[in-house]
Structure formats: structure tokens, C-alpha cells
Amino acid sequence: MRNIFYFFAIITLVYFSSQETYSQVYNANYAAVVNQCSSSNILNNLTEYEALGVKRRGTAALDNTLTWLKNKYLSYGYTASQITEDSYTYTGSTAVCKNLVVTKIGTVYPNTFIIIDGHYDSINGTGTNDNGSGLVCILEVARLLKNIPTQYSIKFINFSGEEDGLYGSQHFVSAVVNATTPKMNIKLVFNLDEVGGVAGMVNNTITCERDMSSPTSNNAASAVVTNELITCVGLYSPLNTFLDRAYASDYMSFQSNNEVITGFFERNETTHKHTPTDFLVNMDPTYNYNVAKAAIGAMLHFAVVDTSLSNEEFESNFQGAIYPNPANDTLYVNCGKLDRNYTFKLIDLLGKTILNKSFEMANQNESISISEIPKGVYLAVIESGKNKYTKKIIIN
Image (cartoon, rainbow, N blue to C red; front, side, top):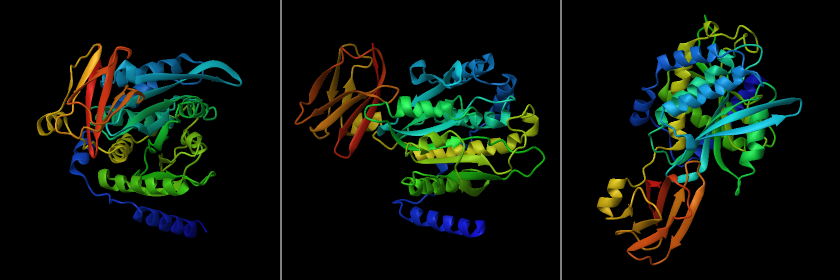
């Protein structure tokens, strides 16, 4: 029966994949980024994570791991304003737990998010595989995509409370996703949990997981993105793939909220998780490295490398400009040769639209007051017809 079910699952994926308006092909530019994945980073980060100890709620080890993660993102060039902590408690514990959220804003769809996530807490042991292995993949994705403009925004989320019952992800969905006005727009959630392989075994296959649970309204969409994930694995890593269902990890909090999910899980499943022997010595760091390569390729595909007008194209081809930069009380927009009907937005580093103005038959130069906007770094976006221009703006 399992073989018959698997056959029909494959047919379903092929069908929905055929509905896509584009086909996935090898992208040499994506591969060049993937090939910058560092095996030494994977090994060193696993070693450092293991040394932090048993990361249970209310422990210094959990707090120290949060600090370790923050410092990693800061070292990659993410700013303090891009990093937020989502704090919560839950029944049966007075300990304050924290999710760590790092936001990279997209240039075309800044208010639509690709979430890549994994939990950083552990139970009974250091959790080097479950889930240090997922975290080190996410860190490599964050490092390599830091300076690559993507059309969709990305949230790198490190959850606590997973081992106690998905408490961290449940809190984030209820207190952040659903509490955002309008509700946070999530394109998909990509979960990495336990992807370190088993020492002494041939670890050459990654399990790709899709939604098969209720509510079922997004099962088909999950099948589509999981099929895309499978393709990315084949294009950008040496790994084979195995199709399975999603269950019992942080993406299920999003699944219950009717979001589109997919995920990675090791094919050879460790016997050491949730035990004092969940150590690096019982893992396969080369396999972990190959999973990271697959994740980088998938995120480049899911977030879509930006093809909007560059600064040079806008300023030379359309003779337009946004100035001054840095700015104090007023920004000026010269639309150049663009259509005089356009919209102007300022978006903060967490993806929130701070200012949204529409112009009809605008003057060649329009002034925009920013005196009430807090100091910081923003993304200025001009949209005119099919043309879109983005520029980083500093407000003093």
C-alpha cells in the first residue's frame, strides 16, 4: 500500500508542477553562490553549538545559544535593527523563552516573506544533530544571501520551545504572524530539522517533506513547492531525494495556520536524538554540508534573485533620482523619463511599509516629508507601470 500511495503522490506532484508558468533549470549564478558554502563553517559551527551544552528552557545554555546566534548574524553584516527577539512563556513554566528573527527585505515584494526556520533548543543532550545541524545550514544561507538582492523578503527564524511542544513557533504564529495588520503575508515556510546524518552510514539522500495534514487547502501548494525543493536538491547538491510527509516540527504551527510549508529531514535517522549522545561524533558533517548547499540553492530559487532596475539603470536610462542620501526632513524624487503616475514607498528593515504615497501627473521633482519618520535605514521603492526602482536610504 505504501508503494501505491507513493506512486500517486509522485503523479500529484508532477501534475501540479506542470501548472507552473516556468520551468526550473540549472542557474550558473545560483551555483556560484552555492559553491561558496563552507564545509569548515559547518564543522566549526557544529562544534561551537555542541560546546554550549544542553539548551533547555530556563537554562544559561539556552540564553548563551541565543547570544551566539545573534553574534553570528551580526558578523555576517546584518544590523541590530534587522534582528528581533520574540519573547514568550507558556503553561507549566515561568522561564522566558525567545525566538530569534532576522529579516532581509525583498526589493519587489517587500511585504511577502519566505521563512526559513529551525529550532535551537535541545532536550536531554546538546542536540548537535537535533537541531544544531539545521541551524548551521540556516546560518550559511543567511551568510551567503546577505548581499544578494532578492525579490521576496526572507525571515531567518531560530525557534526555542520546539522540544517542549512547538511552543516557540506557535507563539510566533499567533503573536506575530496573525497579529500583524494586515496579517503577515507568507509565501512559504522552509523548515530544517535534524539534517546531520549518521556516522558510519552512506548518507546520500535527503527527505523532502510536504503537507499532508488538515487543513488540506494548502496541501496542493505544498506539493508544488516541495517538488521545486526536490529539483533544487538535484541541481545544486550531490544528494538524492526521498519524498515524505511533514510532521512534528515547527512548520506544523504554520501548517495549522493554513500556510504553505516544506522541509528537510535526514533520510538515515539518528538514534541519538533526545539523548546525552547527540554529539558531532555520531553525525556526518559532509552530509550536513551537502544539505546546506541544497538549502542555499532552494532559497535562491524561492526568494528569486532580483532583476529590478539597478541604481545605474534608473539614473542613466531613465535619468531619475532619489536624493539626498542621507536625508534629514525631506526626500526629493525626480522621476526622470518614467511615467508621471507612480507610487513611492519607504519600507523599514523588518518589511513594514512606513510611508506610501501615490502620485498622478507628478511634477518632475516631488518633495516628500520624512520629518516624522524615525532615524534609520529604509528601502525606497518607486513603481511606475512595469518599472520598479529600489534604493537604500538613510534618514538622519
